[in-house]
Image (cartoon, rainbow, N blue to C red; front, top):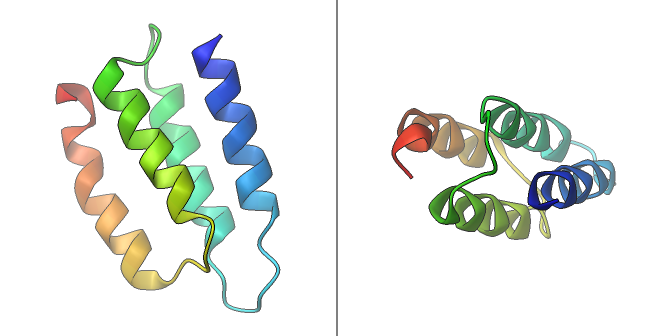
Length: 79
């Protein structure tokens, strides 16, 4: 399913954190929490948001990225 594929991608992307200070694991955990709060399959907008956010994990994640993601989480239900 789409949900399983996204969750698997998030686990893998978060585990790829290799640099000291990289906040990829907490960033991926926030994204997984969003996915877990979705009872049905993610909407097209939610899937696009998750895919874009997973792409963000290709480079080190800093506190600014965590803060930005946290600010965007409030709109999750409307995507």
